Image (cartoon, rainbow, N blue to C red; front, side, top):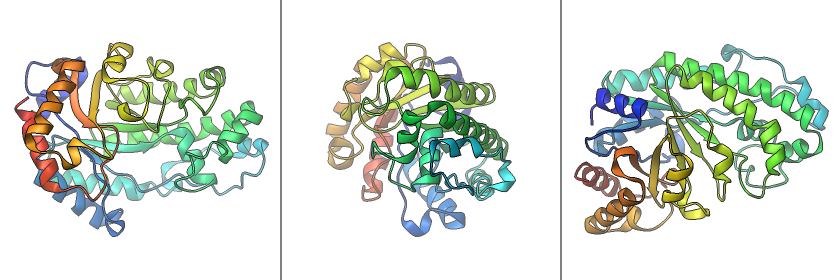
Length: 316
């Protein structure tokens, strides 16, 4: 599927052509930023032929002020992109566009509001801890913390729009916070959801939005009215099947199907991959499906395996 057909599909939500696919991979530590990151992406996507290109984002939100108490979130200032470390990410997107050409479809990865707040306070890999700073503080004083989250969301909105200007066709928004164990539905609905809806609606007016619902056991119904063209979630580590999600997000394209940690996509034969693709298409309907995985693939998976899966998807 070429870019013109892909864009039409993403905007209308239905197609009669081949089923597209999107498989992302973590690259080596020395290939995560700068020219080496761009080169790693170019190599991966040209070798595999995957039609949806996702630029990984290893540039994380940072704060200059210290967050020790919930009230400190009120002191987060408004920021411009030039005041952050994001210009380097925008440079990578521009360079990727130059290498891949105008007919390639590129998504820019955006870390969501809550996980960005966690990156700035506790660092990377801590959000899964239910007692991380932003989760704990939000439960203690939601009014103060939500004031800070609004400032972060405004910066992320600027980043999303800057990514589109830099050459991305859309954004891949990693949403966190809707997990069963994280917050009560009431807290999420009042203090998180409106902030993210405001962010995503403005971006959706300008480009494609892929809503990636990250982490295990999310409450999908709470996210059904998030502005997005495409929705992706962890089918294999939650209670909602592909068919369940297709019903919940009845107005959106569904992306996913494969386990990204183990199983057919990573180690299966071509026939096993083909059969699972047929099952995935049967659960969703091929007309509103993008074949993908629950999340990013490990760097250990064989490029030949992904190349084969991409070719098989075109035959679906």
